[in-house]
Length: 97
Image 1 (cartoon, one colour):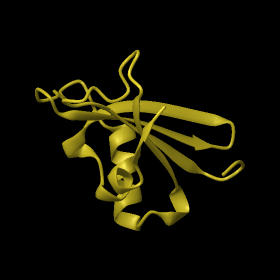
Image 2 (cartoon, helix red, strand yellow):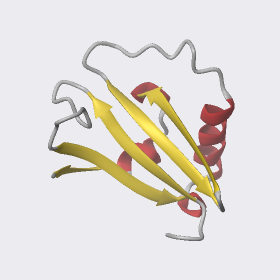
Image 3 (cartoon, one colour):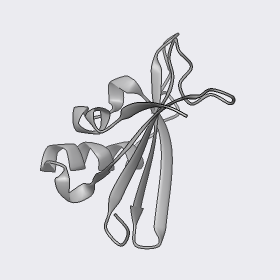
Image 4 (cartoon, one colour):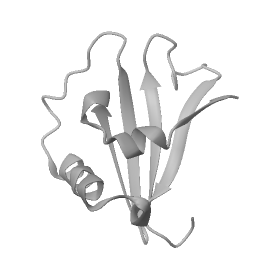
């Protein structure tokens, strides 16, 4: 996926503690921005452009760390699971590392 616009997604937290320090459970994925629908691309842009200060997580809920890369530019945000488009959630796979 080098040299193409892509999004890296990590699911964090939840009851199992995905992605926490020392955890062997990882939940991550990647998707090309060209594979997103116009609606999902717009929702993703809104997440990066929006005010995330009021994005309060619920107990034992997941958070998503989303990194988008375009050329040499990279941006990362963390958001509650209810704000993440389904296509991004579906790109995430669980692994044991």
